[in-house]
Structures are given as C-alpha cells and as structure tokens.
Length: 310
Image 1 (cartoon, rainbow, N blue to C red):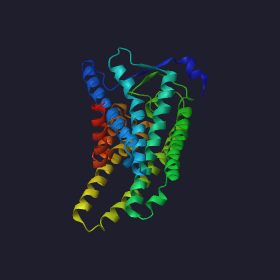
Image 2: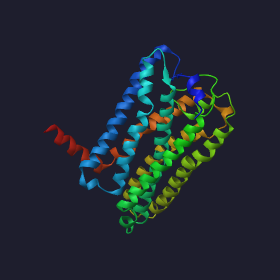
Image 3: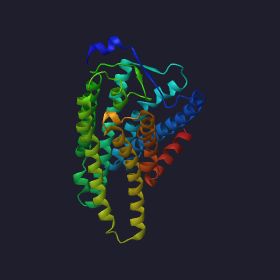
C-alpha cells in the first residue's frame, strides 16, 4: 500500500444513513434491535448444534458455521454505525477503514460460498439420499468450509490492497461503512484496474456461487416434483422458497452494488441497497434457515429448559 495515503489522511468521515439529525436516535434504536435479534438468533443456533447430538449432521454443521459467519458479518459494520448515530463526528481512522473493508469482504465472500455449500448439501440429501453419507463425510464438510474461507480471504486481500493503493482527493465517504464503491469515489487517480478487479474477481465469488446455488435448487425442485405425497412436496417447496427469497435479497443487492461502472454510483440509493445485504439478510437468515426447523426449535427448548433449571 502506498504510504502517501496514510500520511496525507489520518481518518475518513462517514456520511452515515441520513443527514437529518432528528432521525439519528430513531435509527439507533432500530439498528440496535436488529443487531441484538441477529446476534442472539445465531448464537442460539450455534448452541443448539453444539449441545444437541442429533444435530451433528452435515446440514447443521454448515448452519452453525453460517451462523458464526453472520454474527461476524453484521458485527463488521453495525457496531460502528451505532456509535456514529450517537456521535457528532462520524469518523473512522484510515487503518480502521482498511480493517473494516478487509473483514467485511472476507466475511461476505465466505458467506457466498457457504450458501453454495449449503445448497450443494441439500442437493445431495434430496437427489442422492443413498449416497449422501458417503459424499458428505466429515472430511469433505471441513474441506468445503475451509475452501469457502480461503476464497473469501483471497478476494478480500486483493480488493483491499488495490483500493488502498490509490491516492485520495477527499476523506468524506458517502456511505455508512468502508465499502469498495464509495471509497473508489474518493480517488484522484484512474480506478479502471480496481473496477476490472471487481468485475472479474467478485464475479467469480458472487456470480460463481450464485450459479452453483441455482443449479443445486433446479435439481432439487426437479426431484421435488417427482414426490407423490402432496403434503411432503408442499413442505419441501415452502422451505426452498424461503431459502431462495433470502438468496435473492443477498445476491440481488450485492450484484446491484458491485457490478456497475464507477460513473453510475449513486450513493444515496446505494446506502439503502447496502442495508439489504449487510443488515436485513443476516437478520432473516436465522429465521429462514434454522428457526423454522422443528429439530432446531426442539433443541433450543431443551437448552433453555436446562438453563432455567440450573
């Protein structure tokens, strides 16, 4: 990274979500509630997996990893946002901005492929039930999770280094956290290389994992249509529909944000779009992927019962 950026700038100013001072406390309460719900929901899922032997299957192993990711993912942006709601000076140090961008991209990229892995797991469970335990063995599950983290780390490192190698003309980020598009807006130099990297590398991470998810669900839906029991078919379709809604929100907003030329960035609308994949999607995930599941709810009730009787 070019040292000039760090000597010329000591901090960035974040615009936040709104310029209206009267809305700050209201926004603080809303996002605090969302954060608490998201963190608690995901912690319950992790505890349910950890202390319930009947949940020690590949599906719940991936769900527990996904929940851990969601806690870290929303924590990369929302705590700083909450602090800024109550502060007159919405600032973040340059090094803090670097760390925030790296962590956000690491967790976001990893989450893309964990979602793909979860879809692949369901594909094998529904389409290849007799071979499921052989295909999704413990070693394979660990390899898939490690591979997802590796892809996320490589994607994050490349984008963070390229972004903070630029020279900046301003230190005011028209956004509520340090994301690639709003930081590129501050650059005095040509950002063509950065934009090309976003299209190619993020294309591999976002579009690549999205294609894998869609392929898995097409195969799953094809298998569901062959189920004779109407009630079983409706139940499975309901689950798949819920999953696809969250996937659509997460990927749709992400694709809108990253796969456009710099000239089309409009940060006022982009801030709202970013809320969808940084805040809303992580809040919905526990409810859609786990808390509607009878086995998870049963495990949680047992854990709560034991905690109350300690």
